[in-house]
Structures are given as structure tokens and as C-alpha cells.
Image 1 (cartoon, rainbow, N blue to C red):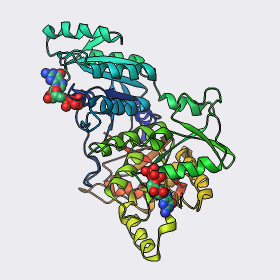
Image 2 (image 1 turned 30 degrees about the horizontal axis):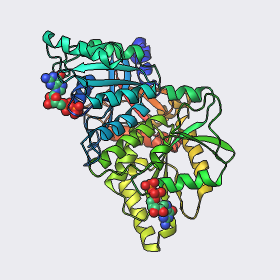
Image 3 (image 1 turned 135 degrees about the vertical axis):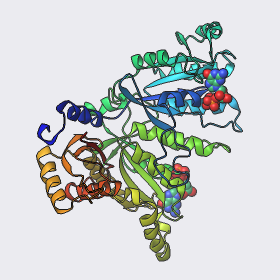
Image 4 (image 1 turned 60 degrees about the vertical axis):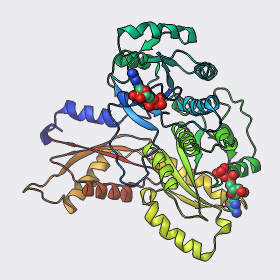
Length: 455
Ligand code: GDP
Ligand code: GDP
């Protein structure tokens, strides 16, 4: 590194920053208008840049990456919520339930000016039941005179209320310090696999694509393992199912089986549920209804799994209904609409007839193998050296930026750090990713590539 002009400490820092495993998840919950979204914006510093330029892709995004005091974590924003026909209590409860489910710790936001309401009390009961660490945020304490209002919230029995003004930033630092004290370093879910627990699968897809049919098919025909293996289930909503001689954990199956019929805000709940399931899983099986046009909603769900960095399998369901014409158009649609997961294993199934169910497990195993692939540094650099020699970066402003060396900083999904002598254009980065995939596989996994440029 030194002879290439990089400071060794910078190199190590870059590798460490890129090499983190799955991040712990913080959920921000509370009634409407207590200031959840304002607080989330404050925590993440700003609205994250819109990375996708496709319309709708980020519209109901619910998870963001954040950093405080040098620690990184994810924040689930439940502020996009709208009141619906179920009435306020049921809606807040449903919303909080999903978010708490996916979280390693929770910030419960209460409007200190209003004080604790019955709805707040209902959320407190949910929080108790879930048993996750909670930090109580007494929001809208814009100045010292509001501190007394905050103190009243001791009555909720959740410990110290942290007086905060999400709007002005007052007290948010102290509150985040308290959050970091209770937030685990890695998602708790991950510890399960570290000691050889079952692999975790999220079955996701828009309403009516056939998720519950597929789940019933796989759970019904195979032996359903009773959830009594010590330490494998914390969670009654997850289900252990034996497939191909191996026990898998299907996460959030209750969310699939329980039909939440909502009029307004149904899409939002669906996104929240999907985000929660994806966070808990290692591999996402994205179900697409092959009989219908691939929609923006399908793309959005795929994007969620990609951005969460999960292994991905795409299952085209209802294959029994396709005629030749539909099959023709489907292939075109897949090319144009789902190019972002062209690397994902694909299965064409029918949850109704059971067609190709046996192909699901091999596809999942392939995706998980890609997700865990580690390329030795020597091999990577031999590959990069050849690549750069054969296909140099275009010359810009009389200079030719070059990739000097690289390393794989992490797996699950694979993360690479490349060190370069100058700015590497997006097109060339994509080219490098494509060639990496050709060379090393990575079937079924997103890969992250970050580039460090020599000062
Ligand atoms: P959410 O529905 O819980 O996500 O609430 P929002 O973040 O949308 O906030 C609801 C309203 O409360 C908005 O008008 C915010 O500007 C306001 N608000 C949020 N935080 C504070 C605060 O700390 N102090 C004051 N005075 N107003 C706030
Ligand atoms: P979910 O909302 O994603 O859980 O979807 P469901 O499993 O409830 O399925 C929605 C509808 O599609 C139901 O009427 C199912 O019977 C039907 N369905 C599901 N899978 C298939 C399939 O493979 N073929 C056909 N023809 N219908 C299916």
C-alpha cells in the first residue's frame, strides 16, 4: 500500500469501514404527529440522497443508515403512516408491532406537551411484551421550560424520559448516547446463525402474488418442525420448516398468514412488513406473479432486498396460468424491469400445482453461497491487474485513473474496497462489477464496491 502512495492507516480504516457485518436496527415508534419523522431526519442527518432515479422506488422507503459516535446502525422510520379505517389505536399498534419486531432496540417517541395518552399506553404494553430495549423520547421539549412536561412521562414505567427537541436538535445527542448503550453491536438475529442455527428466509412480494399459498405448500407437504429447539426461536411469528432434509427458518410467517385488511395505508404496512422481514432474514425469496405485468411495486420490493444486502432468489409464481404469449412478454419484462437482479437465481413455480417446488432449495443454497463468497486477496489482485491492463479506465483531463489494488473487506454480502490513483467513473465501476461476477460467481447476491482515491 505504501509504495502505491496510500497511508497504511487509511487503508486499514477503509477496509474496516467497508467490512462491517449486518447493522443493528433501531425502530422509531409512536403516535402520529409526535415527531417521529422529524427525529429520524435528525438522526440520519438529512434525507438520504435518492440513489435510484426510477419513480416510486424510494417513496415509501422505511429504513435508513445512520451513524452516531462512530457506530453505524439502521433506523426504521414509521412516520410515513396514515390513519386508516381501523381507528387510531389499532393502526398505531399494527405499525409499532411490525417495527418492533424487526428492531434490536426501540425509541418510543411521546409528545411531552400532550403527555401520555391511551394510545401511548397501548404501545407501552406492546413494548413490554416484545421485551426489546426501549429509550423513551419526550419530544417537543424545545426549551428548559418543557423539562417538567418530560418528567411526567416517568409514569409510563419505561425508565428515564429523555427530553428532546427533534425540531431544533436539543437533547438528541444525549438520547442517542442512551440508545447506543442498549443497542447491540450486531443484529441479535445474526447471533443465531453464528452458532449454527437454521438459515433465515423471508418470503416477500406484493399482496396476492401467492406468498401464503407457497408457504402452505412447503410447510404442508413437508414435516413442520415443532418450535422447541432450544435457542432457535425467540419468536413465535417465525416458523421452522424442513425442506430437502434441512431445517429452515421462515421469518415473519405470521405476517404472511395474518391478513391485515386495511384500506388506507395498506401499501405502507406492506412495505413495513417487507422491510421487517428482510432485516431479519439472510435470504429473500421474492415472489412475482408471472401472470401479471411486473409492476413498480414488484421493483420496489426487489430494491428493498438489494439495498438491505440480502441474498436473493426470484420466484415467478402462478406459472400454471401462463400461455405462450404471456411467457414471451414476461421474458421481455424481466429484462427491462428486473435488470437490477439479473444475477439472482430464478425459479418458475406454481404454489398451486407444486410445479418446481423442488428447485427452490437449490436456488436458495446457491444464493447463500454467493452471499458468503470470499475471494482471497492474491486472487483478487491478480484478476484486477489483468483487468486493468486489458481494459484501462478512459483518460480524463490528460490523466488515467487506475485501480491499484483491492481487497474484499467483508461477506454477507461481499464488500470490496478498491484503491485507485484517481476518480473512477460509474460506468467503469459497473464494468468492474460485471467482470467480478463473471470471474467469481456471486450468484444471488448484491455486491458492494467502494473506491478510495489516493490524495
Ligand atoms: P410523525 O407523524 O410522528 O412522524 O411526526 P412529524 O415528524 O411529522 O411531526 C409532526 C409535527 O410536529 C410537525 O409539524 C413537526 O414540525 C412537529 N415537531 C416535530 N418535532 C418537534 C419538536 O421537537 N418541537 C416542536 N415544537 N415541534 C415538533
Ligand atoms: P399472498 O397475498 O401473496 O399471500 O397470496 P395468496 O397466497 O393469498 O394468493 C393469492 C391468490 O392467488 C389466491 O387466490 C391463490 O389461490 C392464488 N394463487 C397462488 N398461487 C397460485 C398459483 O401458483 N397458481 C394459481 N393459478 N393461483 C395461485
